[in-house]
Amino acid sequence: MKKLYAGSVAKYILLALATVAFIFPLIWLLYNSFKTNSQLYDNPWALPPGWSFTNYVYAWNTANIGLNFFNSVKVCALSLFFSLLMSTTASFALTRLKWKLSGLVHGLFVVGMMVPIISMLIPLFFMFSRVGLVNTHAALILIYAVSNLPISIFILTGFMRSFPAELEESAVIDGASMGRLFFSITLPVAKSAIATVTIYIFVTMWNELTTAMVFLSDIKLMTIPLALKTFQGQYSTDYVSSFAAVAMATLPTVLIFTLFNRQIMEGVTAGAVKG
Image (cartoon, rainbow, N blue to C red; front, side, top):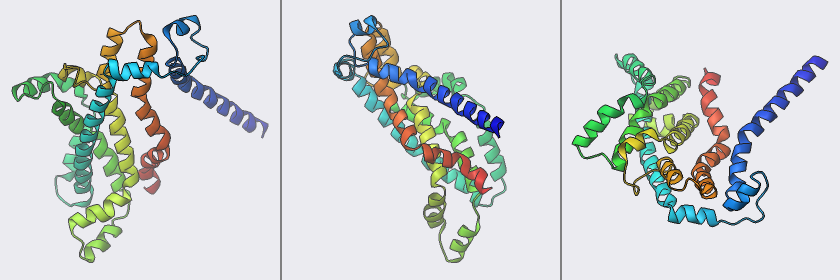
């Protein structure tokens, strides 16, 4: 009994230390973003003497972080819409419609998970150059929407295969069309898996830098990760403004993981529990 108790205490201590190790850098960045550079140099570990949003206003307006923030929102929202539209319908077709090549098609999507998007950037750049999509948000939206399909379909098909087909069979007997079957039964039942896919896609696209660097050069079109890179290059000695810009950039992902942590865990474990 004592050994079990000691083991539990040690486990919780390690978890607490790991939590502090992950959270402290974010907290340190956050409270230093309210300082001036001189206050930061004097003591980077002390709390700020006052809570001024001057650095945030400067980064948002003068350094155009606000414009780049909304660029990221636009690109992520449209990419997410198209990716979810394609992944949910494809997963439904692969798991609920009976056709000979469904296993092969699903296998191709699984193989697609092993192909990094960075390996395709050069041919995509030349192809998009010919059709005038370089230095446009459309290029990022197309790439983000399609590149997230393999992992999205992998998660959704795993979940859709796990819940009983009797629900849909009874609806078909009652005369439900495929459209009604998809929207009224499949989507509501798979909402936890869809929530997981949604959060995963959003966070991945929000933090993506390499593709944006290749296809965007106009500062007015830059997404937030690319804008941060440019901002830190231009204002390399203005640390507190850089901290404010980074804090604003990380806020959406932190909020999403904080507010939807339960939905993420349900979506990840739902297939295993139901299977």
